[in-house]
Length: 99
Image (cartoon, rainbow, N blue to C red; front, side):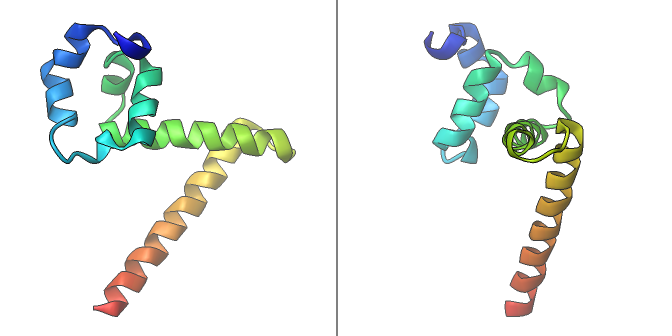
């Protein structure tokens, strides 16, 4: 099977739940993130699929920050999480003000 997933993982009920028609998970970035997981076990250890995807995203971005700024990965993840939470809050507030 492509990218290390076996057919039983692809055919599983969890796959059917997450990979249903029009699921946001079907976007290429999310599929490539799932592909790196190789199976559902890592994903199931997270509190949710979204939490797994966010955690993977933060790890990736923190590694990039760590390469260019004098900061360790744990602090980079914390700073990025805080920044993205602030951005999300700001976006939500702006959207509510537009309505």
